[in-house]
Length: 249
Image (cartoon, rainbow, N blue to C red; front, side, top):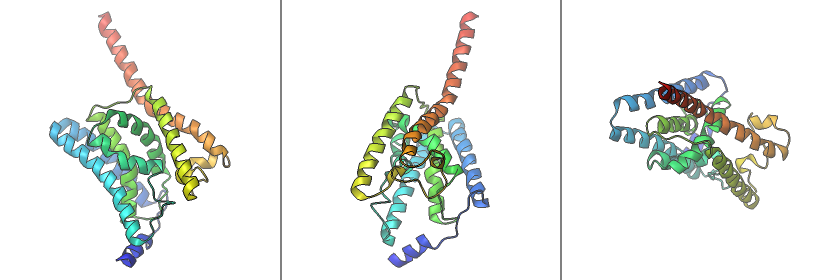
């Protein structure tokens, strides 16, 4: 069994950025992100909406757990590489808290942590396996699936962040950074890319050498969080304008 799983996990067709399979994943993901929340909000009962939302959250979390199980079965699981101490993996592991239990406090963190990072990971995938390998499917479930979950929570569950949550998200990401740094020291690992840049192209390539890019990444994270909140600033401005117009009538 171990040999079969090992061969499956390592014998793959390579994935290339901007290939047909990349565009296919982006296209299918975009359709899902637009269609599923719209259809659920417009045509499903509250109970059905909860089932769809729970299914999205549980699917994302299960995809991560199955990936770890396959690594363990193949004999390649590593404490230095496979703990959920990359932000996307940690978000995958805990998204069910939002989608099943509808916890607003956790939504406020995952909203900011997910949108910017997952969008970047979709444009510049750190992915070696091509369709139809499980790791290809798992990658997109874990990244664009998170965007779907956050959009679904906003549209269907009526959740939304507040401007003050940007501060909470920055504090949270720095707590995560400290925890990852401690684990890196104890295990000689490189979680959260604190000790070195990822092997594939990323925005960190433009932020200077180590350790300076870790510092400058704070400003990139803040810019991502602010950008993620811009739609709500626009919505609030429109609502205030409409309210003022009604009061003046």
